[in-house]
Amino acid sequence: MTRVAVIGGGHNGLVCACYLANAGLDVTVFEANPAAGGCIWTEQLPSGHRIERGAIDHGPILSVAEELELSRFGLEYVFRDVTAGAAFGDGTSLLFHRELETTLEGFAGLEQSDLAGYRTLAEVGSGLLAILDGLSTGPSLADIARLGPIGGIDPMRLVLGSSEKLVGNYIVDRHLAAALTMYGSFSQLPPWLPGTGLFGLLLAGSHGHGPGRPIGGSGQLIHALAKSLEAAGGSLRTGEGVLSIEGSRTPVAIRTSANGNHRFDIVVSTLDIARTSRLVVSGLPALEVGARAATSGSLNVAEFKVDLALSAPATPGRFGPAEAIWMLQPGPGAMARSFGEIAAGLIPSEPSILWASPSALDPSGAPPGGGTAWMSTFVPARVHGGDWTEAALMATAERVLDSFASITGDDVRDRTVDMRVTGPQAWERRTGAVSGNPNHIDMTLDQMFSLRPPTAQGYRTEAPWLYLSGAGTFPGGGLSGMPGKNAAMTLLGDLGRGRSGRSLLSGLSAARRGWRLYRTLRRR
Image 1 (cartoon, one colour):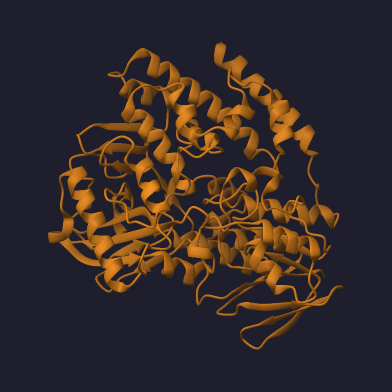
Image 2: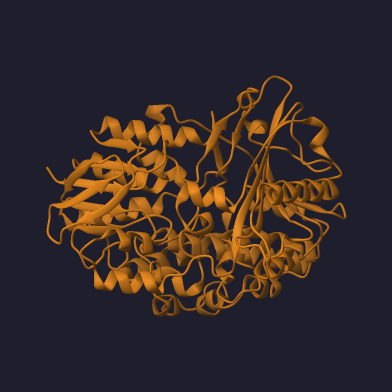
């Protein structure tokens, strides 16, 4: 039986392992942390509150969960009608529903040109995202250019430009434009940066399939994946990080932090390409070239989290509903300006906040009458003239709470039972990536599509026994599970245990035919 080691027990590593184990391979997952999960991090507090210190909304992972039948292992999702809300310090708010038409009806106060522009962004966005979701490997820029105009938009010009420029071509209303670009900026890239155009379509292109949240917390996804792996005969070894991979021919030897020495026929690393390269004792020249080319944290952006346990239900102040995830900005363009401060190493003067309440959809997350709040913002990974001391962490948390109160009219400090603050160093300790970058390597244009990771081999490497997966591979970061699934399908195809996938060009051709059919149906 083919023995496979998967390095990293984040959601992509576990997804990959489950597909491989279900195909009959002998799979072992090694995770350095005491518990698996990576950027999925659910914590039960002594007060009885359950907080989500990591990811909260689950989107594309839902199809993977269905394919793996994770409901058999207790995974159950709850959904909402309002995908997202956007609110500003001047009291303006916008709601983005699961259905496009409902969303447009809620925009009745906007100019007709903005309604038409949003519809265009929604249709083009859903078409392009469907094309990318249908690919098992990243397209090159030449492949994207060959798609030609879609809905009047040139895909090549789109991916080369900025999300601010793309949205500005179709939307005049400053609040709507700021909401669209803020949503795309959670790739940790400023909306004014060239190469971010595709991210400007993410919110408008998401209609029709809203996100869900697992009952019992996001950790339930990790629990179900671990149980699925176990049921298929695989194993998960937590608290056992991989220290080295030795040998140039199979089976290779893996040495772990638990003084373990294991031999495997195939290794799948979900670490970034630089860390993977350092593990290979004998060296792999092409992998080392790719590792030197990869960049992470080049814009000095890191995530900062504030999680609150409250004595009352959590709400976004004067806005609602509480079940939605809310993009809160002091004013239009505030988040775009913050990226400039962050690049200079400064804590944003007016933090923009992504806010949600885990307990609003799942009341089991808090004691009766209580609630939980989830807040995320961006800060500099490296602070100008200082360090991320405990005092700096707490001062930044206070600034985030001040900004929340200023935007929403609600100061929650008098209802706070407990608080957890997660800064750049904590993320780095948990994930091992530079500044805890959840994308592993930056999602800049030179590290996207077929250039992610920068090895030009997709999930394969020059060594027939080593594969790559995780957020540093196509399609990138986010809670999708697609890097894990795609790496597994590639490996199984190479072993002759499944389809290796259509060629990239045939996949693009089929996707384009699907897009044309979609457009035809829309006209009827």
